[in-house]
Length: 135
Image 1 (cartoon, rainbow, N blue to C red):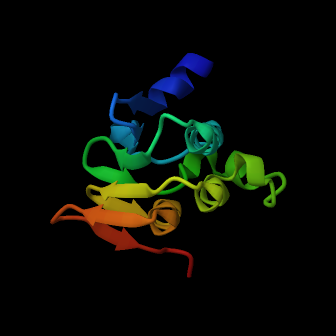
Image 2 (tube, rainbow, N blue to C red):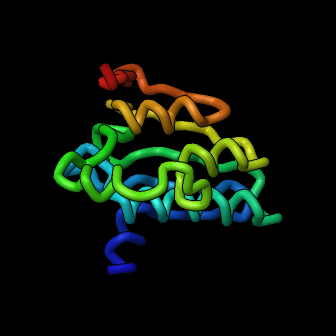
């Protein structure tokens, strides 16, 4: 459902060239499903090409930036072509010519940590926590 995905990855722009992308799934600490990751990648690509956008701010709603992949949807997230650059959030962030500022509130875990590391600048709230659980 496209409207639902659009509500989970919010995009706002202002007159000054600032685009804000908000991961908006606070009840699950902004864990990501495959459709959310694809939308995030596509929005970063589109904003990166938009002449009116000067900077992108990436943040999460609620008490987390992003807790990583939604484990209830992990099979869908991890199947398929891992080299699919067009749908890969981190790859699109690395290709983006606009500066991306990560506004890190709360937890940035595993995939959320990877996304945070792909930002050009990080601004972390006092209680921000960065964790990698790949071991």
